[in-house]
Structures are given as structure tokens and as C-alpha cells.
Length: 588
Image (cartoon, rainbow, N blue to C red; front, side, top):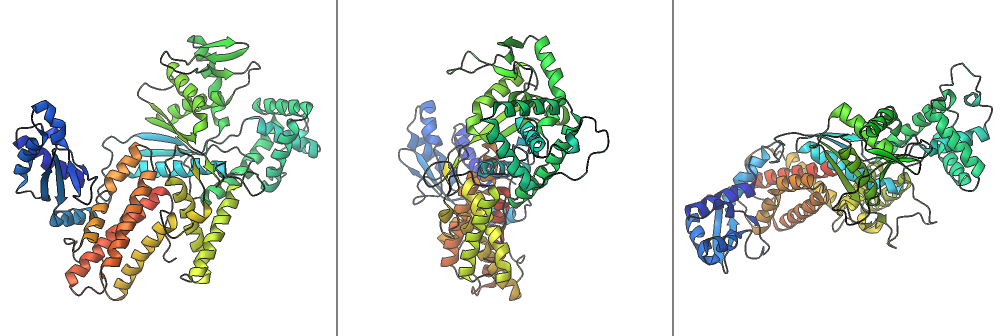
């Protein structure tokens, strides 16, 4: 179905053309003066120069052709040439009735669906997820869901860090602690144990211990570098340990991501890109792109238009070791081979922008991707504490993600129990649902590229622009609909009628903006637009609710109309929060 704005623009364009002007001037926008009108057209202002005519004269000619409009109840000229517009209540009701019957709530499916890979994980194995991993997971998951909703094939990849020095450090520390393990016996030829020689909690203690020691003990660090090299060369015992590390770590990562309602289609690793590196590097050498510089192998990626220095892209270090740059490029080779994507989008900390400029330019220059393949970087800002500095624990350490979630859930549980609206046995589960909304909405309501303050008190509030407020609105609607059905009402009966008051019309107008919001949020990779939209819808609904007697309405047709409007509002809000990656409880 056509969006409301498109239908209005069609009518305005026809009026411009009938008056002898270019129909492209008939674009309609939401009014910046809602006290005067609902929509406006500024085409007469834009056309004044082309037609050497006063804007208000052009506007008068256009409005004269809107007298029999099926769309507008008001079209008036305001000097110097704005056209102020209001929508007919009957037309608006018919539009929403059609929207109610549309599975996608008026969102148009992509005419040419694309295959898009989103890289939005990036944690290192053997280390717990911390708050620094939160934004990538939350933003990436939402962008994935929005992309799928508008009809694209979107593939989410966690892209685990599993092949660097951290592996050598863990292996070295294990060898120091338990040298008797068969993994370190060069003469061992039997099967290795199926059970890992460590738990996840032990693994998470081993890495920081080894990392700390490597910074002060050069001999230990060299041992770890050698262990890393041997692992990458396929040392049998080290590969068996690596498999144990992966199994234990990935199981824990999946549990933590599940608590965030985040999922990945691919659990690819840096190590998966290793087989592609030799051929990739050889081709770059053969084609004259890669050359040695102080022992390292590099590719120049600077461009004449650069206003700041862009260093060469390093492929191999002087000792022949690969870097993140190398594995990122090889991962692009793998993704092109396996999926031939139209776009690869990286949802990563904005401080890594230079790295991805180098990677993207190198990939293009050396022909790793087709000219039409889009490589995109969505760089996000930092999540800060109230002091404006990166979010920490009370003792100044990096907060584990599961601890942050637990703290939020505890706060929500306390508020829900105080509210006494949910039975004790359900309070814990409800707290988790509402707590997740507090975290995700608190993050996503900010423009991704900007830093923001993570304020637990504000994010868990049931009032204001918060996740719990949005959920409270949905639960209120559910409660009304449940009561209506308990009284024998049929939520599918009747149809949406013309608005009976301004608050109802305002709600109806807000609902018509769903399609444009979702499509814009996808095009700009901007989930915050959906947050802003559902906050406006929630405010509009709550105003309507307070001003209108819904269940006590005596006119049955009118009551059915109210109920159908509530059902549509619930669908819009529930679909929107699903796109943001959370859901609503039945009560709260």
C-alpha cells in the first residue's frame, strides 16, 4: 500500500500540474507548526524563481485545484507562499483501516532485495563479555532486524577473535601451571581428552593473569609468542587445547548473548580466514600492490583527496606474522566467496575508523570486492558513566556484561514488587523483560555515533523517554483489550471510524508514520529513529486514553472503532520494539 505522505504528494502534484506548474513541487512534509496545520507544502516557494512569480500567487493557483480533494479537509495559503494542510478524518480512518489489514503495516518490501552481512560481535574468546561489547551487539542486532523487515537477506556474523596472542598466552600459562598435561608432550600420539582441563571461570582467570605477566616478563612473553606461532602452524597438542578453549568459551558467549536477545547466523572466527591469507598475499605481490617497507609487507591506500595522513595498510609484520588487518581482508575474501554480498557492514567502535578506512581501500584497490559491493562502517560512540568517562564498576574496573544485566534486573524487580502489579512468582521474569528494554532502549534511543551517559536511574524509570515507559504503554493497551474480550467483545469486529477528538486524530496521524520511520531507519542505519517514533506514539496514545472513555462508550460502532485503533497501536508498538530487540510482558 502507498504511504500516507505519498498519497498526499500525488494529490498536490496533480494540483501543481493542473495549474501549469512542474508536479515535482508537490512534495509534502510534516508541519513545523502543528498549532496551525498537520502538513505543509513549500513547493510554491521553490518554484518562484523558475516561474518568475510571487510564491503566494503560485500557491493560490494550486489551492484553487484542491477544492474537491478526497485527502485534505483544509488547504490554505499563508504568505509568503506556504500551503498549510489538514487531512480529512474519513480519509485518515480509511487509510488506517487498510493499514490494519496489511501484514507489514504499510512498509514496502525492497524491490531488489540485497544480501547484507553485518559484523556486529567481535569478542575475543576466553574473555568474558563486558560493557564495551554492549553497543555493537545491541545496534547490530537492531539493524539486522530492520533490514530483514524491509525485505533484505541479512546475515549476522559474530566474527570471534580466536587466533592472536591471547591464545599463546593462555597455552603458555596452562603449561606453567600444569606441565604434565598430555597437550605439552611432544611424543604423545594418542587421542586427547574430550573434556577441557579448565572451566569457563578458570579460563577467565587464566587470561588476565597471563596478560599481566607478559607485560613485565619478557621471557614469558617470548614463550607466548612462540606458542602462538606453533598454534598457527598446526601444533597438534596446541590445536587440541584451542578446540577446548573454543568450546568452553563459545558456550558461555552464546549464553550471554541470549540474555541480550542477540543472535548470530554465523559463528565465524579469525582462524576461519587463515586459509585465504597465503593466496591473497601472493596475488597482491604479483599484481604489484604489496611491497616491503622496513621488513613489513604493506599496500599504499592514501588518496589525493585525503586531508589527513592515511598510513599504508600492513599485511604482514617483519617476522611474517599476520595482523587484524590481514584477517579482516581475508575475511572479506571468504565472505565474497561464500555469500557474494551486496554490502558488508561493520558495527564497531568509532575509534577504529582509521583501521577500516585502510581495510576498505585495500580491498577495493586490490580487487577483493566488486566495484558495486558496498563496504560500510557504522562507528558507535562510547557508553559512559555519570562522570562522563567510560562506564566502570565501583572499584574502577571494566564491568562484566552479565553483572550489568543483573544489576538492571534487580532494580526493575524492586520497582515491580513495590508497584505490586505483578504476582511474586511472575515478578522475576517480568523484571528481566523490562530490564532488557531499559538497557536496549537506553542505548538505541541515542544516535549510534554519539557517546552517551548510561544512567541506571533514568533508564529504569516508568516515566519519560525510556524502555519501561514504552512497555507500560503496551501493557496498558493489552489490559484494555483483555477486559473488552472478557466482557464478550470481538477485537476484529467493526472498522476504524473518523476521529472523535483531537487526541484521537493525533494518535491516528502518528500511526501513519510507521512505514516512513522504518524505511528511514534502515536507509540511515539509525535505530534511534524508531525509538523517537514509538515515544511519540506512546505519548499520543496516553493522551487519547486519558481524554476518551473507551470501554464505557455506549455507541457500539464507535467502541469497536476505538478497539480496532488500539489493536493497530499495539501492533505498531510491538513490531517496533521487536525491531529494537526486546518484547513486552503481559503485566508490569
